[in-house]
Length: 61
Image (cartoon, rainbow, N blue to C red; front, top):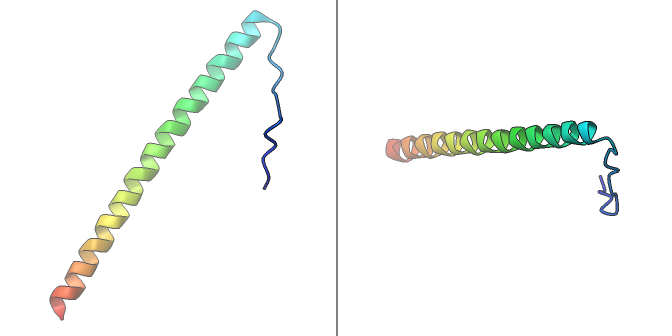
């Protein structure tokens, strides 16, 4: 998938619509940040589980 970096979004002319658009963009940004943090936490948990399993395997030998 290729991103078009030349795309320039058209902002609404109506000030109320512009405020709504900006508020929605802000909410979406916060949601993406939250999902990113949740993903980092999930990765950390999986890495910890992998280390624990590996430690147990090494202790058995």
